[in-house]
Image (cartoon, rainbow, N blue to C red; front, side, top):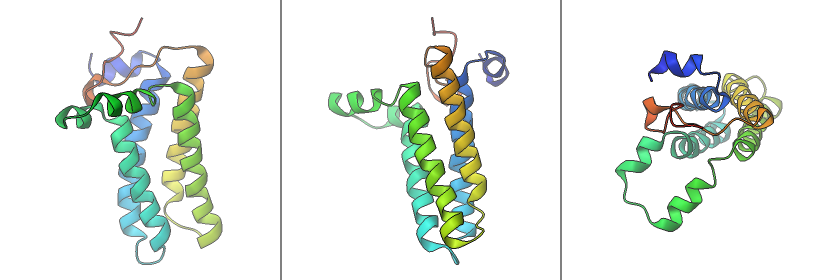
Length: 145
């Protein structure tokens, strides 16, 4: 199933994953843009982007040899509730960057992180099974029962 099939699937975890990918791009790009004036929050944004790459793109973990302990740790992230709370916490950090440093371009990343948190929370509330995009190396929605 390709991108369009995943969008039509109405699986909120797929929407959250794609919004997470957009957040990664925004955090990196806007961190570069705001580096001169907001050094601390730009670096925090890059750290958040790195964490999200490990969590959201399963293909990255397939390239690296991992231990069973690390695999168990990553499996902990395959939960709607945990991802919703993680994205909400990251969004709050980006919104705090606006309150503490004035208007920053990182507000766009904060909004995208908040939308991803809402998507994962909607998946948790509706009781949908967790799925990850097959385009990014995940199981896809075909394998979700």
